[in-house]
Image: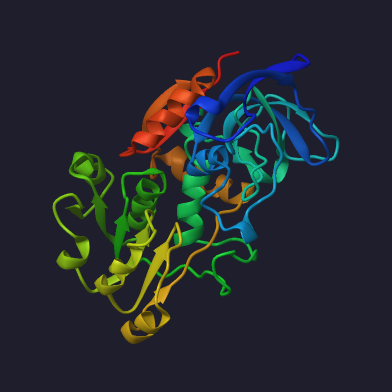
Length: 336
């Protein structure tokens, strides 16, 4: 059984990686609908450093509220230690993984224990270890909800219309930022659904992406994709930002651009080109994690690990993230 206190990484102020403090804090108690998970590994994701920075990149009107000190993190893999009386389907000793309480910033995953909503977790695929399982939830669910099945009716803060995935079988799909967390999953899901995939990344990632199934590779450090390809059915842009609109000219009429990080797009231009720009915001979804878990278990989709760091070394993990050019996922390991 857990002790009354545990180790966790907390933010007492906003700033760079140096503000991540390794603290002794009370061990959480699972509330109604929750299970207590003894954490073995934690996935590191962009929202973790957004939170560390104070969410300055999120418009104030949609910025989630939170108080300091706060434990960052949303992606965990571990073992169930306790189960609330109203929870069915999980038992003490079950290995589980999950994306916790997203899109709020209250996942509290950078810790030895976490109280997890039962609806946000699933059994860990038996064929992968905790490190690989922890690398999957947010990034894989993002790719899944953009490309395969949205799975919820919550409105996106970025657009009024409900996001609708497009048919992938026989389609040509370009994935920008294909080597990163969301990108390498999107490539694999698109291939699984029968698409031809063009991967865009720096040249160092070419062999990695071809091993994952990329049919064509573009090194963005040497060429501009919009000058090389056209007649694309779908662009999934995991980079986004002000330059994302350049991919509109690669699309065929009726094509779609799905920006994971929403940018600015000219409605007149999209109407003239006859294309669609659509995005969503990933949300916690235990049932979808159970579904994608079968793909992970079978090896149909694999989790690439860029690097691992101990929980106590979360600062070093964030420093690694800040250097960019990540291949797959960064994961924190928890030694107890």
